[in-house]
Image (cartoon, rainbow, N blue to C red; front, side):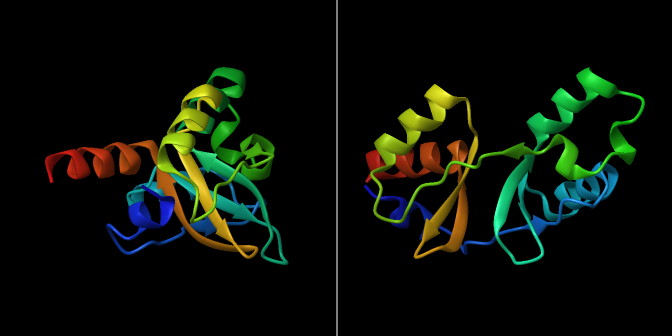
Length: 131
């Protein structure tokens, strides 16, 4: 079972933003797109971070009064860890569990192919067991 199989369950899409957007704007984007995380890219399109619901919670804890007006680049998770299409999903689940991630970008040949969530991986495994 490979990451590419999980991405094949539905149309992969990547929701992205830039670091100077306000947290309010990106929270609205998360809501509108019905996703739990967005990639943060610089002007060259290079991924520099990921902003998730968890970053909102951490931001509320650290600076509740100012959070919504802050730039996403100030609160995003940088140092993004990714996987590739040929990675075994058991390895990815283990990595996500150990590092407390719920969303991981899938990168192939320096191009983002999609984002997989822990939920996607669990759903895929349940479907495979049912077959």
